[in-house]
Length: 331
Ligand code: F6P
Image (cartoon, rainbow, N blue to C red; front, top):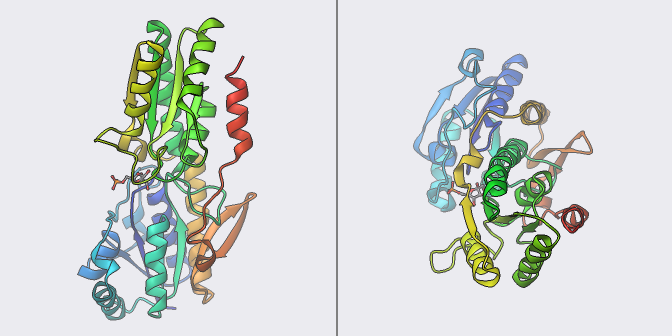
């Protein structure tokens, strides 16, 4: 191979820049030209290319977001859009492409691979919902951001002796809620994967109060009621839960929706190392002639898994962590 491309697609994730840097520098180190595609699949269709040099990825390892920008492209879902992307790939003489993103981005990669373009995926999504890796780029930073917010909310929760409902991201999955909930000492954690009973949540709050707990923190995944039905009558999952608790218990309740702040910020050490390793490995695989693979870290070992095997699969939450969080909040 003489020339490869790299793009970021879908929701951004802290550590994407570290991944771009690793693709570019590993590629140049191996003697191939690296072309950056701006705005993900949208840029592939509309010819937004830039030649990457070692200096074009200088000073980005510590920055959140993605210097290549990202997009969710509806046009790429159409055969006409994919054909235009393919024409541009041929015109740029890209012999393979590293796709950095989540599940939707990997599906896009498979469509290009079907048209004959070798694709290696690098998992980057704060949701951490991709099978084939224990953890995705961005998840560690996002959960640390949430825990930082919980710590701050805990201060005011203690002062005011209120119930605080904190809604976190996770359209279809509860990884952020579970990990941040356990690390943040939440009284209850509500996730899409595990059925919950709000009466039970209220009972736990009242029991806690009787045991001398002055406040409670409830962490709710935005998709707790199922996706895309997280919002009902314009009410997000967190507001729905908060309203129920207020009406049922009579306790003063406040709701915080953390939203997109979870997607930004400087990536943690773990995310920078993960991104560097997974992205450099992706280049290695591409140059070895591989195709249709996702790089991942399983039990702290680099692993490549066929994209065809992982898409459509659901990554399981560790239920023992969920039970542990409940036990630790129950006394
Ligand atoms: O997939 C990552 C994610 O942050 C989800 O947790 C969230 O539901 C979604 O993206 C939000 O997407 P957008 O940035 O398009 O609003």
